Structure formats: C-alpha cells, structure tokens
Image 1: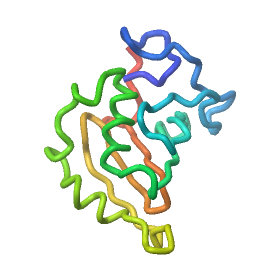
Image 2: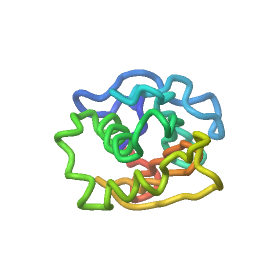
Image 3: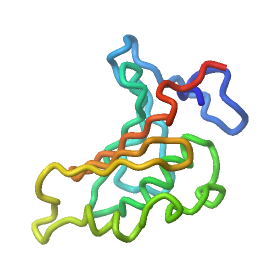
Length: 140
C-alpha cells in the first residue's frame, strides 16, 4: 500500500497530495473518513510510516472508527472489509474506551491489534494510529 498522494495508488484512491515537506511532518491534507463525524481526517506521518486521526470518543464508537478508517485507506466501503469481530471483540473495544461520566476516559490506555493488513492502535484519549502490517507502505 502506498501513502495517499502517491501516483501509483489504485483506482478509487484519493489523488490528494498527503505528504508534508519533511519526513517528520504529518500530511498536509487529511484523508476524509466517511461517517466519523468527530474525526479530523487521516494524516500520514512519513517518519513513523503511520496514519493518524483524532476523534471524539463520546461521539464515535471505536469499532466504527477502526472500520471506517481502514475503509478510507483501502478506498472501499466498510461493507467490503472482513468483519471486525474476526480480529477483536468490537463490543469489548467500545467498552474499553467508553467515556466516563465526566465525558473522558481516565488514563492513557492503548490497545493494538491486526486488522485488514494494518497494525491498529487505539489510544484512550481519542487517537487511532494505523500502520501497514509490514511497516512502511510498499513502493510499487
């Protein structure tokens, strides 16, 4: 998989330029993620070969964020992906990161798992990070 903006991406992929000016800068134009209302959009960070996105845990369920973020990267519908429950219990994931009655999860917890060829890491403060399972995206 190539980072968004790479001219060798396949059909249906975004042609927006996604890289910053240096290896440590995040992408300049976030890749939108459909139906995740609170999301900032996925940005690619070349230095870590990771796509990142912030979202509001009180507005969007982690299981939906994972599926929709991967679908955005793959340029497909979430229905075209394997069910998330094949990788992790989606309801347990949502409970793990459920906001407290003060609106935010306490602490800095993370969970990492493999899904659809990505290493997915969710942070308790509302960040998802996705890295192609082989590390850096392939240069085809």
